[in-house]
Structure formats: structure tokens, C-alpha cells
Image 1 (cartoon, rainbow, N blue to C red):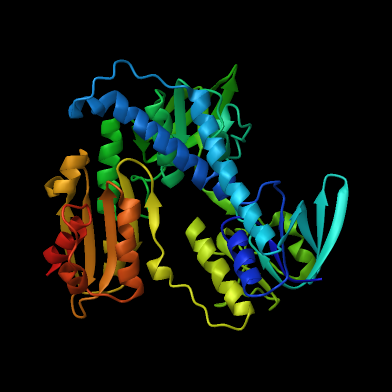
Image 2 (cartoon, helix red, strand yellow; image 1 turned 90 degrees about the vertical axis):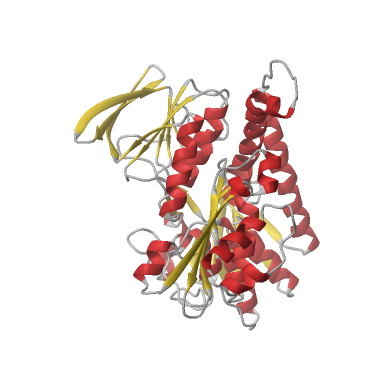
Amino acid sequence: MYDLIVVGSGPGGYIAAIRAAQLGLKVACIDKRKSPGGTCLNVGCIPSKALLQSTEQLEWLQKSSGDQGFKLGEVSLDFGMMMSRKEGIVGGLVDGIHSLFKRYDIAYLQGNASFIDPHTIEIVDGTERQTAVAKFIIIATGSEPIDLPFLRFDEKTVISSTGALCLKEPPKRLVVIGGGAIGVELASVYRRLGSAVMIVEMLETITPTMDPAICKQLLQSLKKQGIDFMLGAKVTGAQINKGTVTLGIEHKQKNTQLEADIALIAIGRRPYTKQLGLEAIGINPTPKGFIPVDGNFKTSLPHIFAIGDVIEGPMLAHRASHEGTAVAELIMGRSATVNYMSIPNVIYTHPEAASVGLTEVEAKEAGLNIVIGTSYFRGNGRARCNGETEGFVKIIGEKTTGRLVGMHIVGPHASELIAEGILALDKKATIHDIANACHPHPTLSEVMMEAAINCL
């Protein structure tokens, strides 16, 4: 008998399990994988960032190192070694979670989990079956990639993001269906490795959750790097023949075809809830598969909670971790909230893009009287020293109160710089607070200060 069972060991699940154990609960964590960490650690955030880092350095050596006086000759890549490095990073982090589970006496139960009754879960691993019982349960099973009815994943010619992270060699021609964060990141990886890359996106923009100004700049940068785009295009059919895929595409009211060696489908993800046996305990997911919860992450059964990708909201690893910590605190009777206004969104292309709070469109739709300040990296001393001058910082404030309501960055190290905006939003800081804070010189962070000054 456990105090808490966490179903799923991703960034929401393992964080919840560890925090609950730190607070004194007897905890078990169930996952179908041998390795904890979920999609994010095993086949998502971490391996993709390892490849993005490696290929970004490769491109710098090949194309930009000469600007700083380096004479390197021909730079080549050992693709297998790059992939091995990625696996080593994943393995080290997995070992770290195992160590933390051991330290806090958390039982790790491998297998597919399904409910027998509201407090009992069956775990099936091949021919082995066991049951586990707990007072409280957290569902944190995450999500899975969505394919197309006429284009199913085979992870050879038609691949998901998972397949894209373990190819044996870069394809000569890669078509990416979907221009969201996953699509543009993986497109960047393989474009740097020499693939001819085309992104096909149904909307007239890429990365649609970002502020329109950020989307425009990022699209311009990626085009300049050599990625091709078909925007406002719909994939209508597909044929696979002898290792190639031919896509039927409706674009600008015309039908055309696009041939590639590999098609990567990155049109989104769906919550992974179907195999949990929720019908056995009376929990009814929405038509899209999400588990309904209240403001404290409780399902229709008050001792069962759900967090992360299985509930409505942005499918972000850090959001799931934040919710996991909150639920562990709530189970112990403590006060805990999640401020969704200050949860950031990041795209790890080059330049990076990051945002927190409201976009300009959202702020106007909310009826706010806004003021906008912008500052460009091309005028920043550190950016010029680094040779990374693309992009800008856009700050949105509420004119009457002076409060920050949104920060949007496209440029070098945006994923790190956005932390200032996160803290400012969380602590209800004003534009004056950011503008008057002494930022070190020369640093990229000065661009945020200057954008805030531009608001005043």
C-alpha cells in the first residue's frame, strides 16, 4: 500500500514523485519505459537540444569561424559519434533520476498501467502482472505524436519526432509537415546536416503561439538559412514507393506534388489516456482525450489528480513539472498554485525565440491599454562581440498601471534571457522596474532594459 502512485515518469511525474517523497509520502512511480524521464528526457526535449547544439556548432565551424580568424580547413562530421553523444547525455540524466528515486525510496514499477478500481492499478510488463494500491494517484502519462489518416508512422519513411532523433544518416530530402516548435527545430537540425528541407504548414505563419512579430522575424531567419516553406498549404494525400514518399499538396488553390526521402509529421500531439482504463473508474476524458480537472488538478474522483499533457493547456515540460510540484504540496494540505501567465514558451532554433505573458494580439483582445517597447540586438555590444545580432526584444506593458504583461524575444540565448520576464510577471513588476534595474555591461540582457526604456 502506497500513499501515492504517480502514473508516468516524465517531467511532471518524476518531479511530483520526488517532491511527494521529500514531504514524507511512500511513493511508487509507474512507467512503460525501462528508463524514467518520459518523452521529454528519452525522445524529446533533451535529445533534440543535444542535436541542435551539436549542429549549431558544426555550422559555426563551417561558416562563421573564419570571421574570427580561425583557419580550420575542411570540417567534417562523424554522424554516429554525434548521435552517441546525444544518447550519453540522455543516459546520464536517466541515471540521475534513478539515483533520486533510490535516495527517496521511490519504487519504480515498469509496465503499462491501467485502473482496476479507484485505488488499484494493474501493471503489465510482457507476461508479468502486478498490482499496486494507493491512497492518492496522479495521472501524468503525457502525450504522443499525431499522424495523418493517410500517412501513418513507420519511423522509416514516415517519421515522428521520435524517429527523427534516431536516424542512421541525414536524408537527402526531408519534408516536415507542421511549422510549430518541433517542426522548425528538427528542420534546423537536418538542414545544418546537409538535407534539403521543406516545411509544409497549413497556416500562413509558423510557430503560431508566438507574437506575430516574433513569427515574422523567425521565418525570415530560417529562410535565410536555407529552409524552404510552403505556408497556407494542406497535405491531401501520400504515396510511398521504394523508400520515397510523394505528398499531394493543395497550395494557393492549386494541386501539386512534393517528393522526399523522409516525411516528418509534426502537426501536434494528443494526450496519452486511452490505455489507462479510465472508464472502469468513471473518469470520462473530453472528445480530444483530455482529462477534466478542477482548479486543484482533481479529477471527478477527488483522490485522483491529473497534470501535464493529459489536461488542457500548453504541452510544455516545465508546465508539467510546475503542476507536479503543486499537486504534491496540495496532497500534503499545503497551499500551492500555478501562475499560467508566467509560464514561458521557447523555440530552440538559431536564433532562439522565447515568450512569456500576453502577445500583442492577446493584450488588445483583452481590452488592455498597452504600450510597446522594442530594442534590437544589432545595437548591443555583446551581441556584436558574439557575432549574433539577429533579432530583438519586444516588451508589452499596461499603460495605466505600468505593469509588464508580456515579453517576447527572438535572438541569441532567448531561452535564458526570458527568465527575467518570467520573474517580472510572476512578481507583478512594472516596466519601470525593468528599465531602472542596473543590467551588467556588456551583456545581452541590456536589450531587455532598453526595450523597457523604449516603453516609457
